[in-house]
Image (tube, rainbow, N blue to C red; front, top):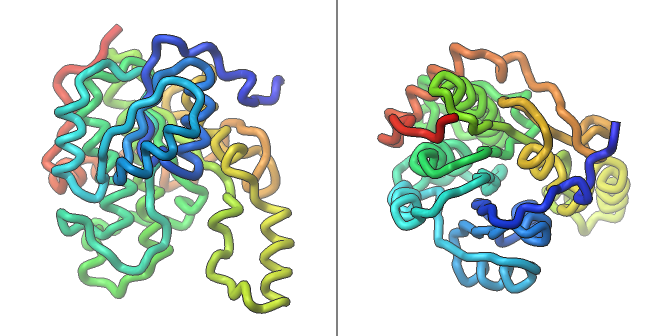
Length: 299
């Protein structure tokens, strides 16, 4: 079996890819590869100035559009303004373990941004998507649960990591239910997901870097378990262009799926729960006011 690298990304001339959060990190690394292979890459970013600065570092055709996933009015405006066909939509943007915050619509920030924002964006753009929808999840989904009684952490004491894990589990349940609906409608579009492993920029950032012992521990663990943004982008690229089935989930092949060449990986039992996925879809429709479009790309 050939190890997937950027060399396996085919010529993408004439194709358009929209990437959320493409002004830095994994999104920018993904954008650079796709643009270098000939794709027109649209950087959908909250801060257009940062997006333009990022685009200036990319070799190839790019465009920058404003999109704030934490504001459904911004999501709707993006979808209304962007009328051209999209070959691949990559739902990459996200927030990870912040203090308690709320979106413009009152949702818990991680659930609202990581899941609901992308849920609304995907369904609004879906009539124009021709090939794939890739959603970036995390191995943190394995510790996630969906609390339908308190999806937005309004009753429970807020805990940042469980909230993050819920949002990443939601990403996988969304992918599964989206693929089911696409298949049922006769669409050739595939819904896939990926996780980047452990990024050196994020892992153990809460440790005190001023402590020599903790600093050495952080450096050692980072070196063993993490990979660069360029390598962390490979599972997303794999999910976007490789010959994989619908509802495929890609991640690193190395130790604890923290680093290494991408492959198809497993997910938690909860993430395979079709009834849970359908229930979350219904709840997401109610919260966002956005539904699966009556018209999608068909064979």
